[in-house]
Image 1 (cartoon, rainbow, N blue to C red):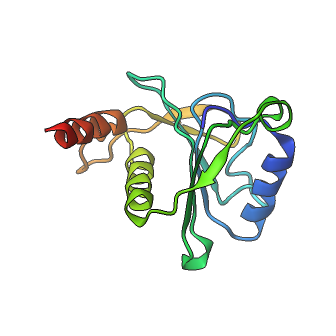
Image 2 (image 1 turned 90 degrees about the vertical axis):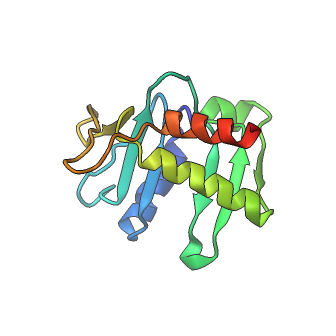
Image 3 (image 1 turned 90 degrees about the horizontal axis):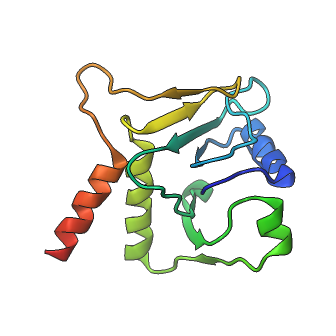
Length: 151
């Protein structure tokens, strides 16, 4: 999504992390959650992808001990969106669409070109390809996928 600033949701994410839940967040802009803090949010990873496009899809994937659920929605997790606007989140029930959205999330989480990883001290460090691995720009991969689906 574009922003995560809602305190009750941040506290719920911290609680889930403390219970051992692994959480990956892709937050394009403002993120008030601090990932990787020992005893608080050590199971949370936050990346921001800043590339050619200003994108911030709102795809939510929950593993639920193998009972996977995927949702799409309109709201960022901000008080103004959650408390004062009409927003929508809906489950994706079509298995093929659900798998497509999971693939998109996987591509974004694997970005090592335009992804910046939020550190516990609130600074971002840009991801870089490791030795032996190639550069992966999620935006380039998604553009290529879109191009192939048109042809």
